[in-house]
Image (tube, rainbow, N blue to C red; front, side, top):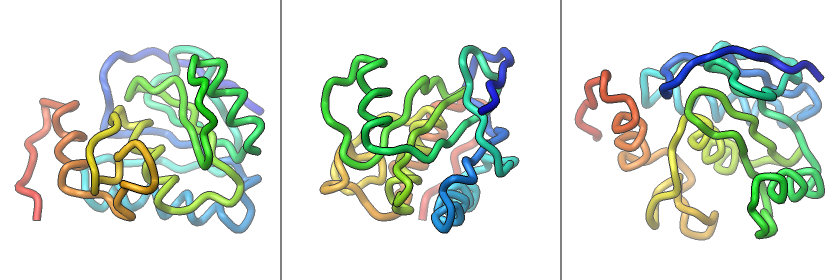
Length: 162
């Protein structure tokens, strides 16, 4: 595992993303989830197939690690979340750098949701991808999710959502 470092302060629209090759057959699911965000926002991901996580202050970098449920729960406790995450979880989310921990059998919905957190998005309401639980979440990125992306980046013009 490599640790990356850097310095920045606002959510970006361009990130280097390190995707853990340990996802195996689900590596493409993670990549497809990244591409889904690129299709509906101006974000650009430079994807590298390698495990690299941020320890502090990484600049516009996202590390996505294939994890067991036990690893995810350990990360959740480290960051003060004492719930038992069932599918995925992400931490150190500043919209500038993030470490995302996904199960080996991750779904596109779960990966897209956690990538949303890595972009700085928070949980929102029923019917959006960013809804707090998978039971109320959309399977796809919604206009509300896109609007939240733009709200965090006031230098960008938010186009009318379809």
